[in-house]
Length: 171
Image (cartoon, rainbow, N blue to C red; front, side):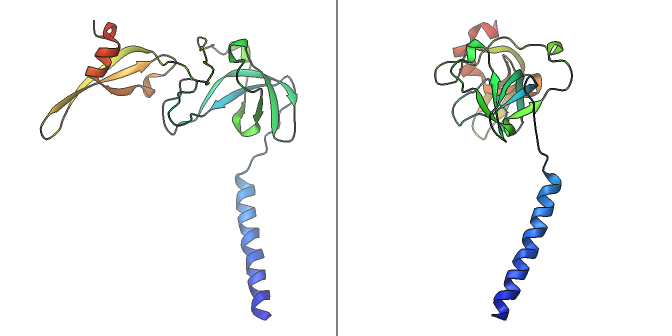
């Protein structure tokens, strides 16, 4: 019985340590109705959602107005008509408060979202070209800037595949 009591005491001590560490890092987010928030987007494997390409970077899309407080951690947003297929209620972890006036934020061109919540990514320009040398062959790659992406998020693609799909970029 003494050993069980000692184990229970040590478990309580460990739990209190873990709780104190997590509470220091946790920040409770609360929004009010008519607040403006950015919406965090995250991709599903194999599906391009809203143009998200970079693996580990967090990204938020344009500001949306909070219509209704659903619960402690859920909010209903006012989405534009082109996002009719997207559910209106979001978890608080998907939102980031807009600091400043939302009308001053530059809007990104509208994205046509399909029924499966994806859209076709379109290349805008070729930024750079490199030839990667392997043991027996050389492969040409081009650095492609995609629509609704920043220069830092440009990707390296095989030149022959890009030339087949988008010949207008190589003229």
